[in-house]
Image (tube, rainbow, N blue to C red):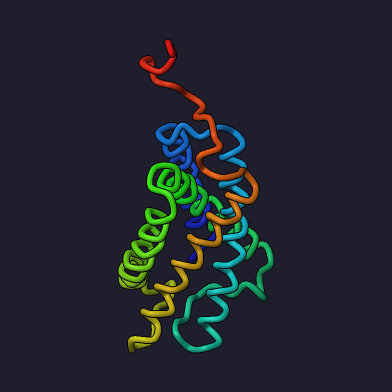
Length: 176
């Protein structure tokens, strides 16, 4: 993965963040909480990549120790890409409560590994997974932990989902 590819990723996920902010009607406090959750998610992701490398579940052509600037850029990319997810989990929590969140965490664990394996197939120069069931399970657990931890940080920073006032109200609710 090159620095230019990461910059493009950051730009695309920043656009996704704007779209998700608009459709979730998130206020500034919730946006700040999602970005804080994204920062923690980015740190977790860096650690998970290193752990998987040490255990031998995967190998990625990302060498953080040799290029500090690249690690910072990758961290920013991870944080920006995670933040929109936490705004979506906030809306799920607001609408469906803990059962909805638990389902969302499970869905993240189901969607994550196929996504990563497709990325590894599309960009083999970035790296890939070792054969076996272990890397799939580890990747799935990484997604569950990433989404749950980021959501928890957002909740700590911005409060529970049902405590928020939405930033925009529909015309039907303005007259009440």
